[in-house]
Image (cartoon, rainbow, N blue to C red; front, side):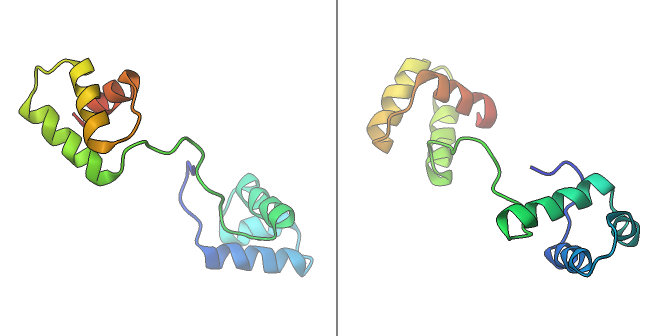
Length: 112
């Protein structure tokens, strides 16, 4: 997950190329107007993985797909006062997936 601005893959490759040519890291960071920590992390990622692109975002994958979430939202809007336990039972039957009450509450809070 990036906090600052995204750095293009072409720029990343140029940084790595200059580093391999022996240019110091401070000079490279000034050339591309990057912080030294950002530039160092790009070089470190390349030396450890051999790839300059950023890794996958961390975190658990969502249980429901986008289409299922859309159906879920529609169900919540139709039956606004439906109990969470009843929503869980409905979701388990219609999506044929194991979904907990906590996950259901999270979907309601995020999307509902």
